[in-house]
Image (tube, rainbow, N blue to C red; front, side, top):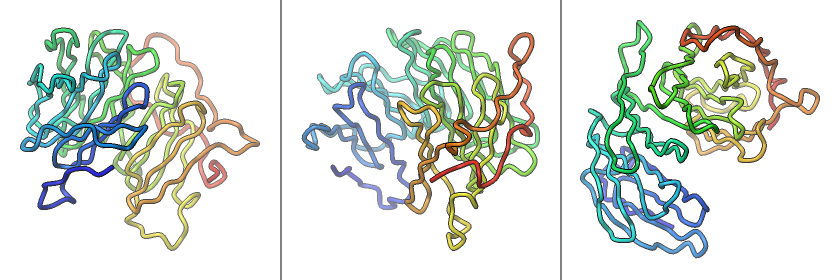
Length: 305
């Protein structure tokens, strides 16, 4: 399966792909046309939407594989029907390229995020915008034009927001931040983060190759994995994680994709059985105050490859 690529500078193209709900189809783009592949035959079923604008994020509708949400580098979101080869709606609400899309089948909404540090909630029936909000950017940060990712919690009501300087949990209906962990001290910028398959943990990677495990309920640090625990000493200091993927059935297992093409799979030591020590339960209602990243053990004995 090969993507169309018309970009004269392929290193500047934004690669993106999405699997359909039954894993029968994959939609993919690398700066050129969007391709739809059959995962049973590995054949190209169709290509569409030649740039400009180029696709920067892709998501299948959770109930209909024919409906695709396509985030573009011109800040729009196009709702495309593959069956009739037609753009049904064009959503405008961001000022920079789209960097994240996530559907909630419970709330019947689409949440979008962009390089403008903006979040938008769209009704997935008529595609009207319901709410929009800017991220709460910590003081002292001047560079906010970076990728912002979104992922729904298992409850389909809350979602995780990943930005270079923070992790946050938002409630969708009011679009309110209920928990936030802000970068500080010795932490390098965040490169990626995801929920575990049961949404009890958040796995986060950082540009200095550190990996952290947080409790999803309050975004408190449970475990910090140092680069020396999985990178050999002769690996370049420029190598860093680009993406984390949570195992779909094992809550304590995840994979880390590196900038040099390497992939590492992590799980806790058998003697531990889990990542670090759960932080104490909080009293009262949820707060958006940043959690202090001091709890939980660290070091090479916390991970196995």
